[in-house]
Length: 344
Image 1: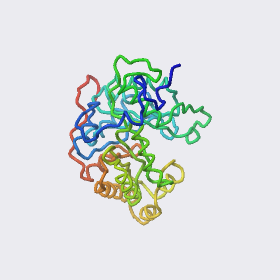
Image 2: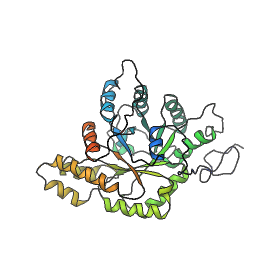
Image 3: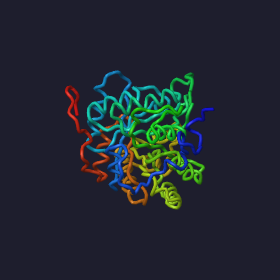
């Protein structure tokens, strides 16, 4: 009887994801060839940024936003209907970015597709030149503006990680059918150190490593002491030597927006002192930017942090300013190809 490739079995066709997929992160071996992987494995502090997808079929909107980010970060995240709200698809954005010579991080959410679709999408993305993938469970449909949509969740982030590693490292679909050419991608996942149960978060991170994650991008950090405590436990488990951890950061434009975010955006934790600081500022936008820069500088000093992931909804210019003023430049531009008719 055929056994499923996600089962933790010792079999030549289906090798245990909990043991066989561990990598020695001190090794200089490059798997995907991506710039992000090369930067992290060289020991340099990495910077990624999020490109907010347009509500449009016009590719120019993507190119304009990517151009702003291209010289200030090592890879650009293409979000996958985050918050369960519909925008241009992440695979579509990745196609445009790779066409222009930029390096995307392809976010894959399990909410909207089953395993058949996700395996096919991964192959298609890799064929277009995508070299980084971020495996996410995804926000529930009730969080978005179409709560009547039917969720899928055939896989979750753990099983999606294993799926990608089965395809990449063992050259096969979950059915056991062989791939002619496997996708060579750098595999990432998300983690949130800032919401309870705090003691469970490092253990969950370990499970994601065991499932195949090689790099991590965290939820927004507005609480550096909480991050420091999380990273202490991460170091106790030795995970800082097995995973590259990029801490999520972003500016808050006002105390009102900050209060709304912590009450409505899943997984966002903003301490009272941060909101009070914004309330007391004459220029709250400038204060939010200053706070973000301070957080970046503080997290750089935490042992085990390998980079930052900068997020600001439809504020790519502000992201570029923050990265520059935080002392994270110069960075070599991501774009490496000249494509006729496409701005790079």
